[in-house]
Image 1 (tube, rainbow, N blue to C red):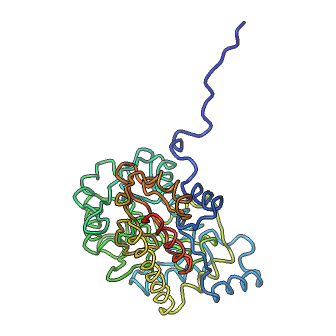
Image 2 (cartoon, rainbow, N blue to C red):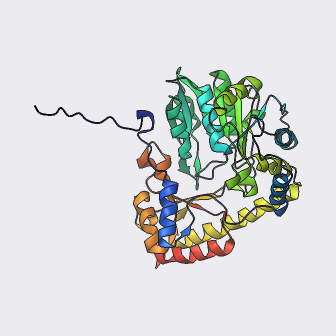
Image 3 (tube, helix red, strand yellow):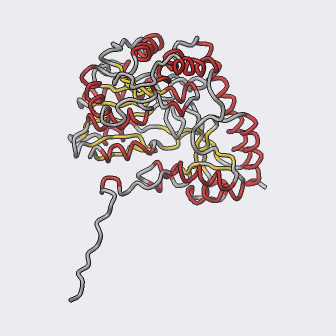
Amino acid sequence: MARMTSTPRPLLNRRLAEFGTTIFAEMSALALSTGSINLGQGFPDTDGPEEVREAAVRALRDGRGNQYPPGPGVPELRTAVAAHQQRRYGLVFDPDTEVLVTAGATEAIAAALLGLLEPGDEVVALEPYYDSYAACIAMAGGRRVPVTLRPRDGAFRLDLDELRDAVTDRTRLLLINTPHNPTGTVLTREELTTIAALAVERDLLVVTDEVYEHLVFDDAEHVPLASLPGMRERTVTIGSAGKTFSFTGWKVGWVTAAPGLLSAVRSAKQYLTYVASGPFQYAVAEALALPESYFEAFRDDMRSKRDVLTAGLAEAGFEVFRTAGTYFVTTDIRPLGESDGIAFCRSLPERAGVVAIPNAVFYDHRDAGAPFVRFAFCKRKDVLEAAVDRLGRLAR
């Protein structure tokens, strides 16, 4: 008798089937295998302030955080986050009921979406978007609805009419990122005021990713969405120590929100990592209390690095879009006679010894992002100068 055969059931569930290995893993591996300068993944190549690092060492030696910290985060850090929000933005949060410490901003995003979405809920997100957004929406059973930022006047801008049209009766939540990764756009006060009015009008929740809040340049202004009328009770704000203090490996993030929203986020978060980064939480509490001079110097240093890289990219033949925030710059490769960013980035290490990230992987509408490529400038100036010199080969 012939044996019956059947098609084996896929091991990966359908919600995650569209997601493979992240582009960051692929490109970082390519950087290692080719000895290229890695301007792809956004991590600094120097550590942050020495006094913050020593605070972590002191916490380890004093036995603080070596065992499980409290589920919401250590009181010192929750108090420091609340003080930071009040000092900078006039936002008052109760450290005990309105602040939650997470394993980086990525866990905060996941916990917020898992805790607030029902299967079938629509989430409107600004495209291109950080790749974990799409995966977290899928894991929560939601449906993502992208609204595309498009090039205009040398930068990427949001079409507010398109945003309004994207909201339906099934929309539960707006997922907003400003300063915006990967485009470097900082939404203006006027744009955010319109978003806030839309959220109030349609009774929407908002999750706002503000991890680059301290990296805004030139005349740009970071305006927390929660500070606008009607938004305090409907906004989940996400922050991170990694981007501001250059300790990305510590994975310390946080959420601030009204008690009901925070409770929903915490209900999901407790079944993800439960707790993380114990000794580092004490160090980040001290980091948030650093004088304003630190934040100014950090911003000025990153702006000067931006200028080194953008000038070099323009000289190499790229069209360079203005970066008002974050530590990324987006370019258009079409002036180089190229149109496929993914193929371009895969070939760039061999052609020029530099690794970048194709923006197309941050789009649902892949064609809209095809010619755009992102470079990170959170590196030492000598590294950026060497990368610029290598990229000059493309113009020769």
